[in-house]
Amino acid sequence: MAYDISVPHSFTKRGIFYFERRVPSDLKQHYSSGKICYSLRTKSAPVAASRAQRAAQRLDEYWYYLRVQDQDLPGKHLLRRKENMQVATVVASEPDSPSVTLSEAVGIYLRLKGAGRPLTFARAAELSCGYVIDACGDKDLTRYRKTDATAFWDALIAKGLTGSSITRIFGTVRAVINFAISEVGLEMTNPFTGVYYDRSQGVKERKPLSRKAVLRVQSQCRRHDDELRWLVALISDTGMRLAEAAGLKRDDIVLSSQIPHVVIRPHPWRRLKTRSSGRKVPLVGESLWAAHRILSAGPAWDYAFPRYTDGKVTNANSASAALNKWIKQQVKEGGTMHGFRHAMRDRLRAVECPSDVADQIGGWETDGVGQSYGQGYPLQVLRKWLQLGVEEL
Image (tube, rainbow, N blue to C red; front, side, top):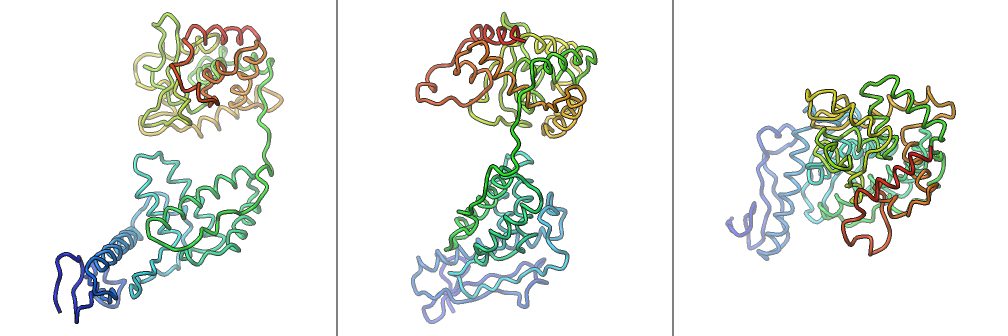
């Protein structure tokens, strides 16, 4: 037996390289032996080094997940792992046949791609792959078949999910599996690709709030005059997305400028949906009133809406649930907060606002290479069209 320092975790016997790794003391209960040892099936040092490094990386990943099995891992319950599932022992007899289960693939995906991402990123991966585990089991990735993808689709349909939701879930599952295939070095085709289904199934069209509904809601905002209604009013005459408004800092609201406006930019607690979402929007009408009320509340906090933003996360889902419930009480046709955004687009169309100006106001993507040149329209131009849109009401 001889050792070659150029090939980690190995020794040679009769010229053949062998992989050798001791099992950590805290994981010995999972193994029948205290050492993992097998032939790398080569006499070439470079080939042996590559195989040994890959085997060591696989073991490090697997041992990491063994260690967190019994820890309070955030979101672990969403994977719906069965109580009686046995932890599989690594059988490292074949270095060219790596193995990883779907739940382990989720862990790899979140550990390597989840850094700095919002909580929703991890929850989406855990929840989507949890649905697969519910429907098909927590299998080795190489054991999933097209029939599993079909059964997964059937299970989502049975839950009453819409085509758009199913598309989003399938996309997340594909991303997790593709990433694991690449990282672990699996030779397989992702069975969750190319699955046909009706993406429009169950999708309800989001309708804009009518002129009458917008005016009624704005009137009620003035009447209640509190933090929740300031948020509604701020959105009503700017067309901002709910998360954009709920995640604002007080410093993002600029009233000292010649043209009062709000600066929509990314924050650690709230990312922006698209690259074009970062923008400045003039404050007019009820949005200007709301901005004054927000800043007049006193500098007791740094955030415009501390109810929904704490410096770590913006809870737009909570805001949506509360405000949509209140708006439905005000509007008979069943409006939602997103209806203000649709209504703003229609109001700008009604005053014949150029589409690229409307895109800049709402933070919508604008097609065409030329749109990426320059800094966009100045605030006075945006205010002119927004003011015309307010007068359209």
